[in-house]
Image 1: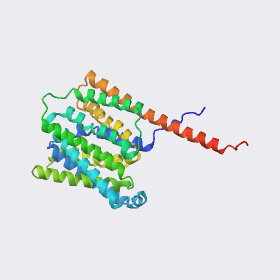
Image 2 (image 1 turned 90 degrees about the vertical axis):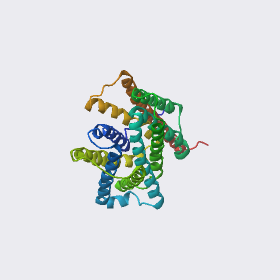
Image 3 (image 1 turned 90 degrees about the horizontal axis):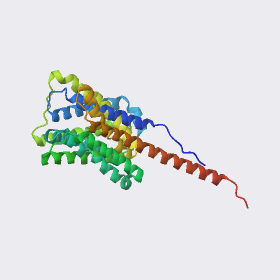
Length: 316
């Protein structure tokens, strides 16, 4: 009987989880910045791009080894970044119109789209066990954010949240389709795309001005250089090496950590429903990861057995 091989958590998955936890502090930091949400988004993109461009220049020799930037890869990465920048702006606009809870529920429906497209675009099979784990995570997200969903939501705000959800799916799908480019060069291209999209959208709204009060500049630098620069650099580099389904499921740890950090640092009370939702998200994510490892172990064990049987001398 062949044993199931259980692999330790790989480095790319750890990087992805670390970036999600870092992103979970965005709400806490943004609450300290006395500026319009669109200005905060534009500011963090500019600072994030500056950071990644500096890292890309400093590590340009390593970047050459990580992969040459072909025209198709550059376009896909830029479009992925544009999805990110546009998604942030529409999401923050939805926050102001329908609240954070409903906006986040709709926004992370983009993960459902990623999950649905993964068999078609990336050849990833959706098993019944994985589907059940994903359903548990979705239910948990509904409990975590559902308590702040207001009745009579503004249709325009809901529409903005839907656009943000599509943008999230575009970020993940386009990012995975451009896996040939690595290093900080990858993040710089994506952040450049994000800046272009954010500038255009803000210009349409009435001008891409940027105004951050001096007393908030420290928090802005923290959000832009650490959470956006370092966080997105790690996030962008990990996504191409992780299954799209896993990205979709584990991505729900970001809104969960956001709620948890708000409770710790902003003293926002957690309801029993939110605690139950958090437990569901964690349980569903862990079960999904274990299911994937079990399938990987079985696959490797089967291949090893087949190799051994093939190597045995035939008896005539």
